[in-house]
Amino acid sequence: MGLPSVVCLCAAVFLLHSSLFTVSAKKTYIVQMNHHQKPPSYSTHGQWYSDHLQALTSAAPDSILYTYDLAYNGFAAALSDEEVESLRQSDSVLDVYEDPVYTLHTTRTPEFLGLGDTTWQPGRMRPNPHAMEMDTARIRRALPRGLKWRTPAS
Image (cartoon, rainbow, N blue to C red; front, side):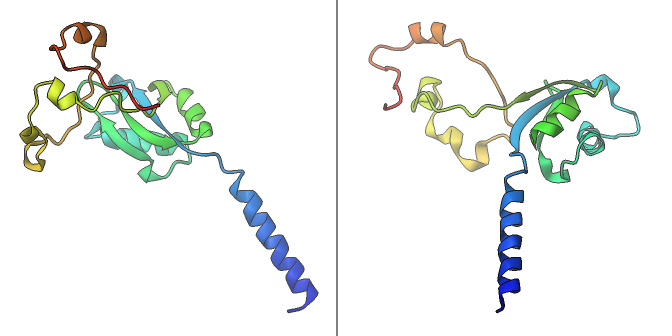
């Protein structure tokens, strides 16, 4: 292999390596949509969300991770910062916010909620996830004696 070939190979590796760092990292975001603006030509909100995302951004079709359509109208998607800014400019988008990763604060939640081991068997689970918020200040006072909150090991 001659010197020009080695120089070209090194230059190609350098350019490839530097271009990998210019791509912005994608994070998971929740996008809240104004469902009243869904055109009647779409049979489902999910189709509209996908097409709307494609029209406003360069996001791949598989960027949408989950669609919400019962108590909340929107979707979860893996997006770059530029794609988030494009969505925020749309009149059909009410809000875009990052979906944080939460850490486990207790290892006894099923017991605490009175759920037995049979609740978590594969055939007994419902297909749709549910989100809820709990007021832990009130619950803490209602704990049975002897059952304590477990704190994460530090």
